[in-house]
Length: 361
Image 1 (cartoon, rainbow, N blue to C red):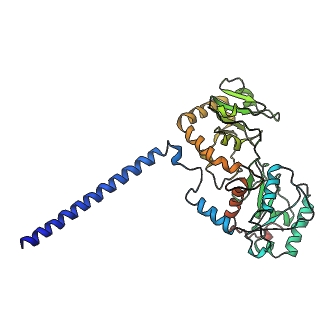
Image 2: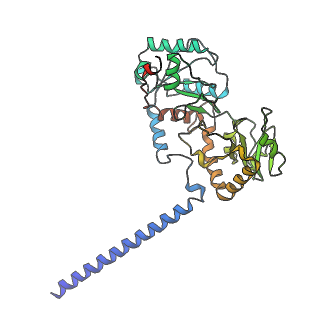
């Protein structure tokens, strides 16, 4: 009897010890998780520039393995006018994504000359509808096209379906009204080959003016010693904490600013819906948006606050994300071309069936 009681007592003690160890382990894990959660607000290496950091890499591999695109034959040979368009089209033609079998394609590319008239483009789409079975299956929703200027709103049925349903890839920034958020995509600009090297930040803000339309706000900033205004890029870009861009004048240097560790600050009074890779990157964590109407004082107030509170984190995320803004003659993993392809891959199941009679009464 004594031995049985001793054995039972030992089992009880072991159980209590096990529970105590388990409780202690849970406490340590909870404390560590709480600590890391708090520190992640301040340490850039504990954060990610991606909207879905846990899914982008496995999805990217699936895209590389399975994504297929069929390219229609254009009416006649042509060339694109901008470097970004040309690099994208050339990369697409020679990429493993291209297939000669339309039945295995996820998406269909519609190539046409940038100077093609709207009437000729409408005829081209009508020909695809009449001679190929693929357009009518989704009214063009599994098709995409490349146009820097974009397609406006037209009354012709073929152009309406192209505009409303097909994915438009245009150049950033887009013309007002020629871009449909959450459907269309923008190409990042090709970087300046003479882009300066990164150095230690000294100026609060850097502004590059290219001789185009003048900005009243930029003119006011030119008198502030904390801001540097230049007409040509120099090594001063990398010595600035923020790079200012007037959205109504020129914002094409955002990618270069990210790679140099210069946090972009966009001056605008309207929402920005056409930044490159809106489906991939956490732009709100890498770009500062300042309203123009509030003037220079507001610009300095926002930049000063951002610099004190989260500048290092934004800068770190921007440098990591900048690899997606690199164009190469031979495409490389996660460069501009492949990231645009990833955005297209995300849209491969998006099908829009449209009631035609509502448009063309």
